[in-house]
Amino acid sequence: MNRPLCILGPAAALAAWLVIGVSWAVNSDWFVFTEHAFSDLGGIEARMPWIYNYGLILVGLLATLYSLCPYRAAVDRLEAFGSGLLLTAGLFLALIGVYPAGTRPHVFVSTWFFIQMDMALAALSLGAYRARRSLANMAALALSLAAFPVYILVGITLGWPSAAVAEAYGIVVIDIVVIILTLDYLRRRV
Image 1 (cartoon, rainbow, N blue to C red):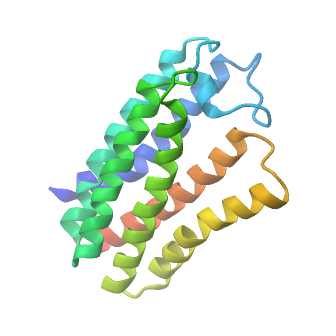
Image 2: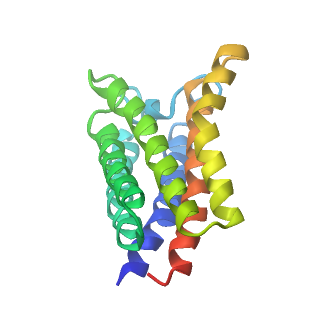
Image 3: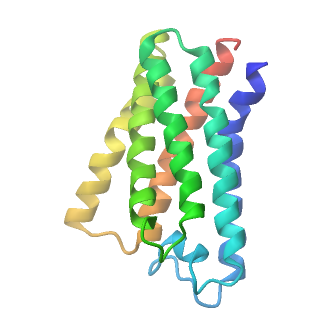
């Protein structure tokens, strides 16, 4: 019963890139990766912004449902807590589609999604490492703990060329950690 829920994490990651890719292709005449934010693909100037916005709502729903996988696989309260943070992050991801670029709450919900997801993955990675001290879980923990400081350090020293580049970095980190954790949950025979 829980295995399909566990597959939703990697499915959400794949769906997110598909939504970004299709939206980018539709808006390729003006969208520049090193000048814009991905959210611009769902903004007022975008062609067919519904692709991006409804796509993010769907990806947020997948992430929210995926949060049940670590909850059911949890061996301690830290993993259960992390799954709650993940559920909240999924809701904030969906809210990015509800409040697209140009609306008042957009900056808050998009920023809070990344912060919430980073906290969720750190808690889940630490919980997974405590449950099964594997090299993969240690890598997930190190990556989730280093992601935000690296983001800040790059922003202060070099500067991110655009919000989209910074977002892509965050999404790649999320995807890697989710894949590592999902493999761990599936090994637990959930």
